[in-house]
Image (cartoon, rainbow, N blue to C red; front, side, top):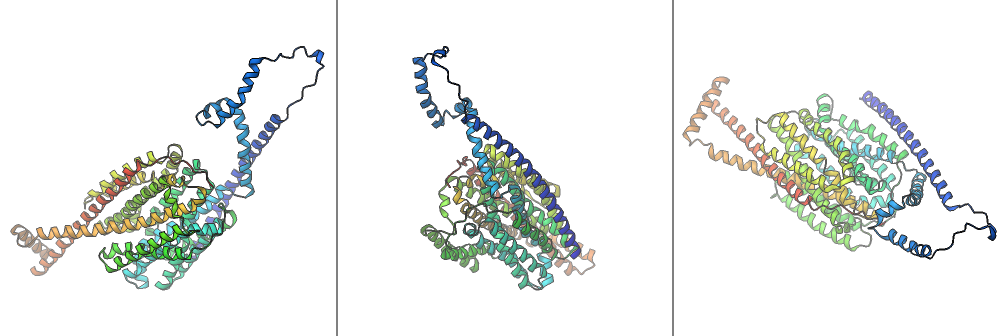
Length: 627
């Protein structure tokens, strides 16, 4: 194990050296270009300001002096007011740029050079900052999906039940739900560099605790420490991107972020499935420790504060209401997928969550310094895109739960085979996310959202036709096309809404958006799993009412089946009948489960249709330049 980790660290250091060399070389090229541009601008400005003085000539020698013309004086009199009017008029701006392009360039370039100089003084290298934060986000999201496949192995190794081991995921999600809403306060209080570095330290320390854990309590402690760091990383990543890049370049940057958000969860099951087959489940935590350590070093060396620190006052009551509200809400929806909506635990959790969230909203709207500025929802495009993102997340997260149930529990595929089926879709997502980001910068999110949701609706509907004879390649193709459609949605829709917010509300907008998406994902998962379970019971009841011993035809076939099984297994006739009953029960339950999954995909299709309708109302956001 130590040899593997050592090799892993060596490879990571070599990659770091290569990245550093490339970024340094790129920075030198940019610096030389900026120096040339600045010198040219200074020369042009000096030439414009310093005009050569003409030698004075005696009056008797000024034979070629032009005689003043009344018409010339009149034109000069009106020339300056007309020019001022054209500069102030938005309609005549293209014409003004055409006529006075040289003058505009002379005025614009010094401002750009000044902003670049200020950025260089702060020591902010966008490439290095993005590498540091993207690496941290990738390993944090990857770790969330690695553990799912290892749950049965952890149960056997630590000797715990399924209900107990489920808290490794439920507790992680609850801590995420508590920390995400307060990230806006933490960013304003500590700055981006300290906060992101602290988040990675928490995440890496939690991974170490999980790796060395000898009992479930220690493992659970490590997961909570991990979640404390991971819950901060994603909203902080989005805030850093929006602070670094102007609105016209955010689409491309968010497209790169989409690789992290989608590619890591899709690679996780494949990687963990292979590791579990050959090594211990502890290796799932061992592999993220050197990456986390490397990213901590990158954060200390490369990361800079990209937002202003305002040192706000901590809203203790808001934090209490937020923690209780979102914690119980996520827990209630999580348990609803297992115990059903009529469970006393689910009902009491949701009631407590609703009361606490109402108190949280009232508190945040009435206090002078709110922990989470809920007034971001007064911006129409942000509110609409947040709703659409929530709906998309509901459909996507629910489908990601249903498909592995069908593949592993019904069709009998291994975890590795199930993960390999998801891998091509992840590759498509990774390729298309930067492309969709570039397209967003040019045409906006509405065309992309309409096309992406149309593809999502069609492919989700095709998943309503699953059966025992559906081929592996057919499911693979459907999933690839579904991920192709999703690649146009996740980052573009979110970016369109966040672009409308003023700069001082960016951190609050990312925190609110991520909180809404997290809650929507939990709701979608619990809702679609409940639909599947309910419809499974319904379809199984139908089979019971049809397949009865009172039907002479079925009774005859059932007797023949029992005799045949008894003869093959060399069993008595009575044992053959019991075996036939078990086989028939298993077949009926299997078919009922498939039909329940199909019904859940019907509901997921309807959810996607709602998002498609709302996508037609997305407008191109006019960037708010208020600071």
